[in-house]
Length: 156
Image (cartoon, rainbow, N blue to C red):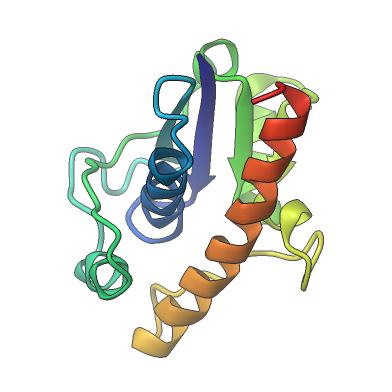
């Protein structure tokens, strides 16, 4: 089982949306028995909470179910997951501090974005639905590329 963890700041906007979109793509691709996904936040602001209602709304608009409760990223996740995908450079730095290293399995989500390699996935929390739609589009195309990467790396 390939295990993937998506990480943002609070685990209520970007990372649970990435998790939900990715799970749907994995299911459509017939890979649910080979790939597991989850998400977490570097901060503990929303542990145990549902995702932001706007996250759920934008996901539902695109036919993507969201089923997640907020959790905080911890050092133990480094050994529990094969791939750690940070939504932005700040999350990336916070994760390396928590882990005490910069492992090969840690990447930026937009390293897989054909239209913005290495850029941050913007945090839509302070804005309106347009920001959530932009994040959805960024994640959707980046996750297509990431899934292709996994297929090649693991002969799926």
